Image (cartoon, rainbow, N blue to C red):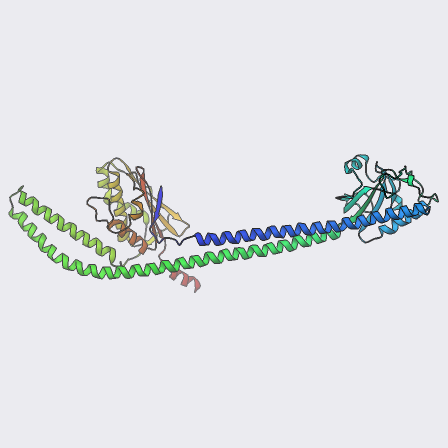
Length: 479
């Protein structure tokens, strides 16, 4: 099924879609770069905290090794641990056994308690290299606080194969010296406050969202600007085409009027002579039949001239507010006898809720009759002719005329509104061209959909109120 609209063709859309696609691709690239920069910022902040924690852990290990050489007491190591924990952003530093029992902590009160359960310690799988995780601390004084926690095996000697012993819990004020046997696979933890990290990330996310919003707004503004520019260009071109078309029709109208006047005078004489010879010939004779044919051909030429003048001359429409149901019923009444003679069923329910429409009743009835007669000829016999009404968006009326005829071929469909194009042996090819002209003079559109051997649907869409009336209503509202 194909559709043809009786209006000017739209401008090529390829440049518009190319521009829009380019804008969207540009936006996607910028968004990807912004997300990449955001992730890079997170990685830098994470690396900074990791390096800071590594320095603290190694410094504490170095201080502990130095204390072992100088036979420091455990209370001096505790003092060192507490002093190091005073660094900005440090939440705690702790040394635990492999099962999670605290043997040293920046908070002396935590020594001897459980930092993590054995199951958690096993899942952490601490090794000789620093590992980190984001966690939420439980218990006082850091309850429900987000922390960046770094941990690894606590090294009291510089080499992994150094002697390691078991550290039992001692009083933090003990005067016993620290020895290399005080740790065996113990784990050291350093936790940092992530408030700064969260603040930086939130700021980066906010800035990224602002940047992306501005970028999307610019892209949307560009697309809208292109849309309105194309729409203005299309309207301007359609207006220019309409002006050229009307100028051309005016010239053709003047020419056709002159030619028609010159042709009709001799045609009247020819028809008069034909009628004279018909009356002087014997009834049923060949001479009388030839005279009748001559008179019919003169009538046909007069009809062609009348249709040509109707097509090219500007039409002075007389708009009236009418009930569209009555217009449809009146026009169907004019063709009902032809339809019934061919056993064609006419379907029209009407819609009494539709508003009254401003149109030229005579000219619009002529349009309907042309379409009805075409449909009846296309059906032939034993078919249906259905008319339906629809209010579109509250401001347009759509009249659909559907027949069950033979349809229109795909090759003929683009040309059916061209003057003098016809597939009928006795047609002039001006009927649909006149229909299109009248509908366009009503500021409307005509479209047709057709499938060969399945029928055709002509759709007439006209405004409920004429443009002049709309301007008057607008002025009254403003007043």
